[in-house]
Length: 322
Image (cartoon, rainbow, N blue to C red):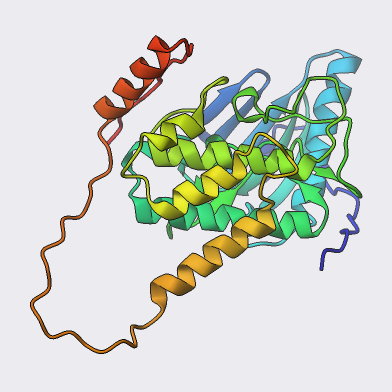
């Protein structure tokens, strides 16, 4: 039974020096950069083996820009300081420093956007299941993440998924909200910028469906992509991926699966996979079974060309890093 979480106020410290100096760290390299935000990895000046990820929101000498960055900073740390889940990133400390707000957190070197081309079907199922677990934890507490996408899921050294970037998270007493951030390529068909969203939880379900399709099809999300049509032509996609994706990508929010329903679907699949066989043992030689391989990108490109020839303005973006 869901219960709305009572969020405690955000806690951060103010310094007159840089975050690295305040924390005794040395900036090593940039992990990601976008607009006025960047993520860097920093090492302990006394112990190079200890590393932290620093998310830095730089603000200008402008009152409006300062308020905007402070809002996202406070919003993110408020949620992260209040939630506890093994598949959600943990914050060590939050700092307000000259010209920037900084969130120091556990360091994980890769996200699913970069890891995607090398993942096996089993790894995809594992990471997807862990993200669903994290989202169910949030939704049960009336929290929406607001920006579920490949880049916002990190992989730790033990091979577990960590949902991050809570700058757009919201506490939603009911289903509706006038505010929604998200990333354009992941937004559902009912989303119209500036208009209230009637069911933000189902809109988040659609984002999760795009997330799963991207992993299963080896494609990077693009606005206007017909994932359901691509799925119909992708014979090697595991059945559990196909079923979940089709349920999450229903155009109608009313018919679209909730995170709870997908969680149950995954549980049922896991139980059936691990259920021992109780039938009479057949001692005849086992038939030779060929294990289907994951589709090559050339096949995916061909499907894009076919869709494009039928009037679909689609573009494939792939990057092989294996």
